[in-house]
Structure formats: structure tokens, C-alpha cells
Length: 419
Image (tube, rainbow, N blue to C red; front, side, top):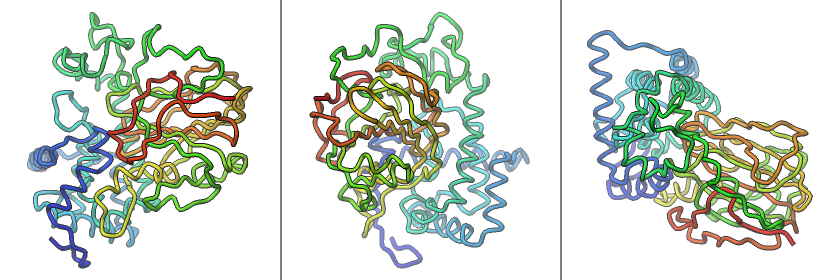
């Protein structure tokens, strides 16, 4: 297969890239790529039926995207090219810009069901486009990214609504199979009540743990995990500015911390990063006790992965350090008595509808107190330490770069300790 610009991409290379994409390895997309294709085909049939009945409803956020594509020739060029190039990978995918808009209109009111084989519709819709040369450029365009964020927010509003509870039933997300797979008995869900006593699908997604679960490590020197997740990387002696876009996985503090005045105080310090799978607990907690110095949201990219020459099949799994520098993320700086200033950085990836911070500057925290939560979406987490704060880490570095090989750590369990 060849793209219009002459770059080659064989079916074997496409399959390898898919298998090593963040969405597939993190569990947000099925292992079998043909399942995604079948879902896309079904989405296409649903859209065709709606067109035949003149039932397409243009949602405000999708209309905003349509206006951007119409008025901005650069965005229109990249979006059109990525659709054309993706069609060379899969002829039955999105046909043109109008078809893409219609499919997004359908996604805005889609509530994932447990029995669906695809739970993350925008990841599935964009997966082939993200692999194309034009797509790699398009999803880094700030204006296009802002328009997609608007669509995700409108989708999130639907997932926050009572209408989204229709999937919180004993044959879907509250089924015995889901209960076992997602360890739902660890959480505040009342299975004797309709919808588990939950207000919406997002209420289910960022469900709270029961008292007595995820206990805080009692060692006074312990630094605890802020979230459930697998270790991506433990890196020491981190630099102020580095080439975060290369495969060597280098953290760049100035970029990660969005040019914060505090960035230079972390030079030579340490970074711990983990990622959350779709079934993990999606609230995050304080790794240390202390006082909140500042807490803010940085709006960044969402559907983008590390780019490398020759479309390296590992680019997706190697992307999380890159995403720590460019994606939508929260920055919560905590001044602790034991570990200096610590920055907790929740990172949105793919369907990150919301990064919600629930603490305020000046607030006093105990170790393990809640800081915020992710609504429906892919996600990663960094904790940044000042030099000398961490005596040693108690979890192994994931030197393979393979997310499936990282150690899984429960929130509030020890990941490091102070001197």
C-alpha cells in the first residue's frame, strides 16, 4: 500500500502498528483489529440509515468542527488528506469530510455497553487516521484539537446525564462478568438498587472505592501511588529541557510543567509515570501530605502519538513520555514536609472527556486524600519530585517500554520512600 505522498505502509506494518498502539496495549481497543473494522462498518450502516430517514442531528460541537474545516484551508487539507490516506489502509472506512462529521454526530450520543467489543468510539474512529502522515500532522493542529475537545465535552455531558444510565444494568456494566473483571465489589455500587444507585455512566466510570479498600501505606517515609495503574517509567536526574519527541523516552520538565516558575526547582529530580487501563479506578490521590500550592488544568492534545521515521510500530507504546509534554493534563503542586514540593500530573489520552481537579490552593492534605478524577477516557499519571526528595523507588522501572510489562500498583500503595 502507498499513500498519495509516496510513503509506503504495508498491511503487515499496519497490523504491527495497531498492535503496539496505546489504545490496543492499554486495553481501550480490542486485540483483534478486525473487531474495530466490524464496529466501524456497523457505525457506517447506522449513519446511512439515519441519512435515509433524514435523521442526522448536527450537534453544536460537530457544527463548530464543520465551520473550522470550511474556513481554515490548512485544517481542511490535513483532514481531507488523512481520510484519503486512511482509505488506502481500509476502503470501508470514513469516505469524506461529510461522512466523518455524520459519524461524530452519532458518537456524541453513544453510550458504550459492556457487551460491545469497542468501548472507546473516537479511538476506533480515528485509529487508522492517526497512523497516516496527514493524520500525524492534523491531530497536532491546535485549532482542530480545540474543536475535537468541544466534541468530547459534549459527549461527556451526555455521559453525565441520567439518560446514560441505560447501560448500568445486570446484563451490561453491572453483570456478573463485569463485576468479576472490573472488581466492582471493591467500589461504592449498590447492586440491589436500579442502576446500582449511580447517577450516570460517568458516575460509574469514576466510581469511588469502599472504605477499607486501597488502604494507605502506614510507613511515614512512604510515598504512595496516586492512582491504580502499571508503571511506565521511573526516571532519575530529569532535565529542564530535553527531546521528548524522540524514542529514547526523555522527560522535559519545562514542557511537562507548562513553563511553571517552579520547573527549575525540579531539575535533577525524578519522575514516576504509570498508566490506567479502562477497568482501573479513575480517581487520583495525594502521594504525600502537605499544602496545595497551585492546581490548574493545561489544555493540550489528545489524539496524537510519538512520530518516528518509517512509522515505527512501537510509536504508540513509546508515546506516554511525549504525551506528558503535549497532552491535556492537570498540574497539582503540593508542598510536603517530607518530600519537598511534589507535582502530581494527571494526563488525558484519547477519549479524555474531563480532567477534574477537586482541590484548591491553600488546602491542607493528608497522604491519600483525593485530588480529582478522570471521566470517561484514556489516561496516564506522572509524579515529579525535586532532587534528593526520593531516597529510592520501591517499584521497578519498566525498562522494556512495553506497557504490558510494567508492575501494577494499587492507589495508596508504596512506590518510593524519603530519606
